[in-house]
Amino acid sequence: MVFDLPFIWAGIIAFAVLVYVVLDGFDLGVGILFAIEPHERERSLMMNSVAPVWDGNETWLVMGGGGLLAVFPLAYATVLPALYVPIIAMLLALVFRGVAFEYRWRTARWKGVWDMAFFGGSLVAALMQGIALGALVQGIEIEGRAYAGGWWDWLTPFSLLTGVAVAIGYALLGATWLVMKTEGEMHDRMRSRAKLLGIATLALIGLVSLWTPFQEPLYFQRWFAWPTIAFSVVVPVLVAALAWVLFSGLASGHDRYPFLASQGLFVLSFVGIGISFYPFIVPPSLTIAEAAAPESSLLFTLVGFLILMPMILAYTAYAYYVFRGKMDPDEGYH
Image (tube, rainbow, N blue to C red):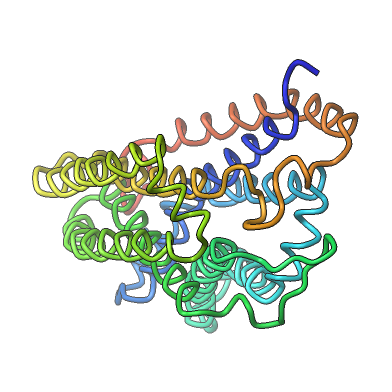
């Protein structure tokens, strides 16, 4: 083949995971902020802001996980046993969160229970995603093409830090989303919270970035050797620029800029992780080429992807277009 199919598919899966993070991240963040809103009207408004798009956002998680199983079965078979606990906890949390969307509107007596399910599901899902990421970054022990680590290897101070970082970052996305979608008292409260969450997110990005190169010698070499050291130098500048856009947008009332800047911080962090990993799909032992399915399978699934992807992108773009603009607390979107 003229094209390197394993690396094409690695890029596709990375793209799907990134889109999931930037889309589902803000509605998980809205759920995390849900518990600190004291009034029923505001909580309903928060849930309404993501109700039209939340289930479509999770399409990308299915695509990333399904794609990993289909085209990188060896990676799937080693990552899943290593991360059973956080992955199962994340999936159960997403289930409870999804059920809360449906049942909260159909009961008065149990509404508080479903409110806590929405908040708890969002928080646990965010924490588990970050912990799973941290466990993957710190490396998975493989012997003879199989996972050789222990049941609790995923639980370390580093993975707990990344879990908290992702949860706080998602809360920032949620706050800036609500700044963009609401008006009045909630808008003002979310602007104040977004400032605090922005400071916390930037601090956690710094801590994780400083700690990551010491997880594996490969990362240290990658970040401080030429030519990738150039990206290491540029990253702080880009982070500073996005931080300026975030806080200046919050101060000036340009409500879209903080949300876009927060998304930019996640994209930048994701690119940094990708550079650290390459060419491994399960660091530090399993490369993209080693984990790939046979080339005929990669080609077959790629054809299906090329047919379905335009439909998914069109549906996603249309949904966000229809529900664009500020929300009216009494009438919905306007």
